Length: 434
Image 1 (cartoon, helix red, strand yellow):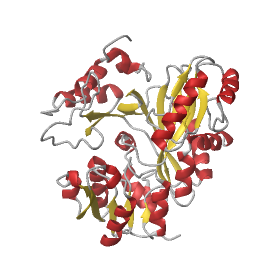
Image 2 (cartoon, rainbow, N blue to C red; image 1 turned 180 degrees about the vertical axis):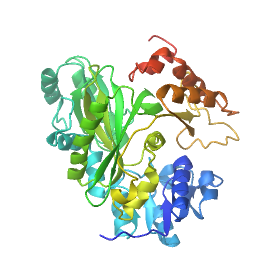
Image 3 (cartoon, rainbow, N blue to C red; image 1 turned 120 degrees about the vertical axis):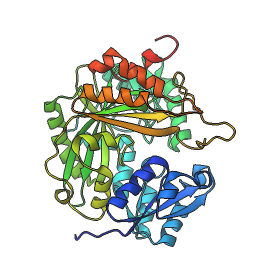
Image 4 (cartoon, rainbow, N blue to C red; image 1 turned 90 degrees about the vertical axis):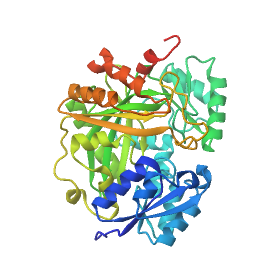
């Protein structure tokens, strides 16, 4: 299949990821169209794009999630492709289908792959068949509390109930014993139905102190797959990441090679194309277990770019144009040095309550609280940490609370500096009982 060259791309997103895509397009000589809500009229992505179109009022349901408005903007401006960024419609299979039907290239996986990966128990079953390590649990959606009790007895408590169509911690319940399961099953179903319009939940073994590790993938439209190493994402609160780094201090060279080989085969077999992330939990013994696929670019993709020298967003565009990985990548993937990202959020650093909704607020209260991403690179992890500490100390944000004081405490912690932490790590910095 011969490659094409896009002349104009619409970015169906806002904020820093929209600016990031605009920068990649400028490097490739491609014109850009920004879409924006009324609240984002003076945002950076609107100023930096070649064209900009207002697609609705502030609420995302009537703007950034409004598929007809986005497609209309794309048709009016005559774009060749749409980049969805992350969040909003980036993993919406219907949106990808509508783009295809409108003869506009969707810069991401195909709709059927997005649909399969978006249903977690289907993705788990697929990965299990291809030899990717999976946590013990239900083979599919639980049909009743009784089925859950039977499976939990085999797997062993504690177990966790998870929304099949969900994420971000919603529709999840930890079950410590059989007496809790029936009521928590109904709670998880109710929350999943409210949040994701699907009450389906599944069950898996619960790891009390895991690390959260994710592997970055690139796959072209010719069956070639490459793994760009892993990222450590264990420093998080309420299942939302606060600090990420690459490579993980817990993953060995042998583990990286083994998981990468398994994933190359699995991703190719799935027919997956473009960029994506395969997420794993690491147990206390250091064993990795697949949990889900994020079929999009991630917020934390820059740390991988620093240690590999590969521009992931430009690669996404070039893959969508039909180019092969051998044309896109400079050579074999090698990890050099270490990189850390801090998500600077408009939040109280002690309670994580958003700090933005007030009169004359400049940061719109309608969207995510992310204000900026700060990334450092060093020849090793110690240097990357030191540079992040210096950069945070020089970072000035006035008028709002930010997460910076919390991130400074994390970086100064001896266990963090030694690489000894898991997803419970953040609790030591929060007020109240630990």
